[in-house]
Structures are given as C-alpha cells and as structure tokens.
Length: 355
Image (tube, rainbow, N blue to C red; front, side, top):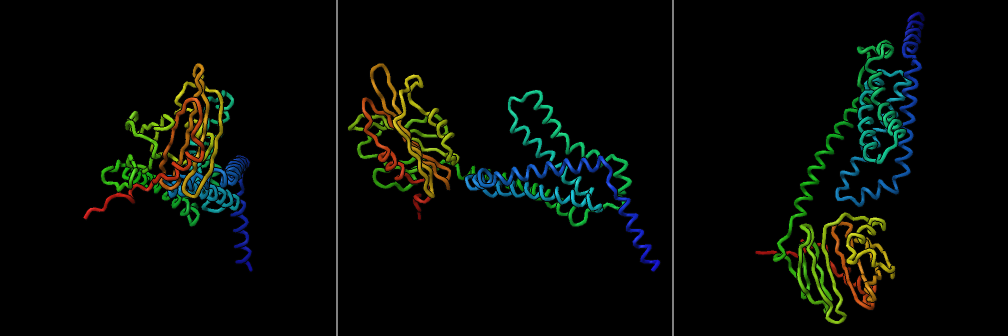
C-alpha cells in the first residue's frame, strides 16, 4: 500500500515538474497556429497547385518528394507540440529538430513570394521569419526549460528518430535533383537528323517530325536562336509566309502564359494591331493545343496572322505554326489543327536501327 502511494506521489511530483510556464505556452500556441495555417493553406492548394505541379513537371518524383516531406514536417511539428503538452521526455529534442526546418522553409517562402515590399510588410515578414529562430534559442537557453527538462532526462525516442529520418529524406532530394538534371541533359542532346527515319514529305529538327502541306515550299532553315530551328515556307497558292518552330518547352496549359508567348512571337509592331479574329483551345490526353488568329493593318493593307501551338504533356516538346497572309484570311483553325496533329514528338522511336 505504501509502495503504491509512493509511486503515485512520484507521478504527481513528475507532473508538477513538467508544468509549462507562460512563455513556453505562448511559444507552443504560436507554433501551432503557424502549422495549422500552412496545413489549411496546403489542403486548399492540393487540387489547384500541388497535384497539377506534380503531374505536369518534368521530374514528378522530385516534386512528390518535396510536397510529401513538407507535409510530414507539418505533422511532425504538431506531434512535437502534443509531446510538449504531455511533458514527454522527447518533447524538447523533437521541437529542436522541427524548428530549423520551418525556419528555412519560411525563409525560402518569404524570399520567393515577396516583391516590392512596404516597410510594414518587411517588419511583419521579419517577425514571422524570426519566430522559429527565437523559439529555438529559447529552448536552448531558458533556465526554466533546463529545470523542467534536465538534459539527462531527455531522449530522442521513437518521435525523435522519425525527425532524423525526415532530415535523411530531405537529404535525398538534392541527389534526386542531380539525377534528374543528368537525365534531362542526356535527353536534351541533339539527335543526328540523318539517323531519323522519315516518311515521304516529312521534315525534322531532331525534336519533332512534321509533314508540311503539299502547297508549302521550303525557303530556308534559319537558326536565329541556339535553342530552336525555324523552318521558313511560302504557300504556292496564297503566297502566305509560313514559319514552323520545333522546341523543347515546359507544358503549361494556362491561357495567361500562352498569351505571353504570342506577345513574344507576333510578327508585326503592336501598334499595327487591329483586332482578334478568333481563338480556340482544346486538350487531349497527350497534348494541349492553342489556335489564335489576329488582324493587323499597315497603311491601307490588311494582314492576317495565325499562330497555333501543340505542346506535348509527356515529352515536354512543342511545335508552333505561324502563318502571315495578306488581304484575306484563307487559313482556318481546322487547317492549323490538321498540321499540328500530324506532328510526331517521339523522335527516338523513328531512329534507324543499324545492324
């Protein structure tokens, strides 16, 4: 009986010894609010940003590891707070493991998202960035923490081991980046065009294979940039100018980003722009297609510009078609789509197999 009473008394004394002071409670509360806020924000972005970011990336495994590790650190942080509230011997080691990660994550997030900041926003940003650092220093130097959690009583335990493994997972990501970069570099090497098996009337620059219309006559192949070849044609019937560009592009289905591409490639001075004739957009399992047609006026002469692109989802390649016509618009959206759909992105499957 006395032994049971002694054990119970010892438990009460240990609980009293783990009483949290006000500063510690405030720190834990602020840390929980931060974790709760970013977890809710992350959940709201799963469908809009996170999943599309993984699926549309050239390195989906890397993006998945980044998001997965980020989510695990949120869960681990909440776990560390629960351990602290329970007075666990693993509480302080777990918090010390967790806070540096969130400090670095906040730094990267603040740097990438802050542009033209006001003095007030800078102060607020510094306070947010400073909290994990302040909390970490508090855990290291606070006399109250040292009294409540003597170093000889602290232990990593199972929770702390999980935190260490999360850092190991974080260390694997740079290795994945290197591997992905090497693979991308190998895949981006220029293929010997002479080794590609072409059918009648087909052309290639080593990235895509396309078949020009029967009425298109090749004028030249120019290389205005080191990253893309431009094929210049003219139509023997309408005398329109046709430019075909094959390139390696990031798959981006957003109309907003495509408008930027149009602005960069328009063949006339923007001051000559008269109006939009029409535009179409559709998506398949393999590609996204944009077709835009515009009207320009130079003195009393009307010009029509058709700009269409097909961007591959799986291979990260694209082909763009630019047609300039004078006086009347003879090219239809259907004509542009017909050309784009005849393009082959899987160039390697058409290479000659030599004995």
